[in-house]
Length: 139
Image (cartoon, rainbow, N blue to C red):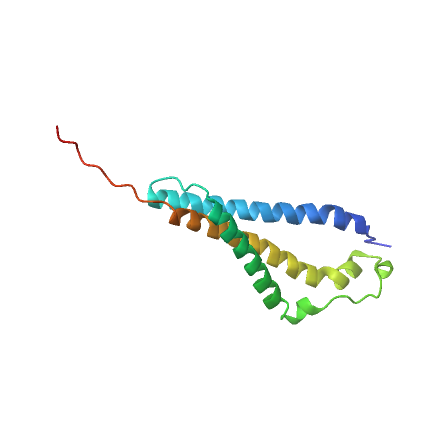
């Protein structure tokens, strides 16, 4: 048969791929916004502990909101067609059984990390105390 699958490949490759995607999206978003703030403020934006908590909260809230809203789309509610994993023989069977719901979960997860990467630099920038410009000293 064509397109026979090995479920282990999906598990073995899927988890690291999603993890690396989350990290890459987070890092790219964080660094891009940090650079923009550096140009605007004229100084580096140091990382702070509060931004870790706010970023984590943003990730969780975005994940939950995205997952709940995307699952309202009928195409993403389909799935679980098969009664047991032993009935899945091809990649198409795997997609019909798990694909739409898994896709929605991955989109929500990566979106959560994007939100965390976007929020953290702004929280860090809000903790910067503007430095007073000193004029020439009189002697």
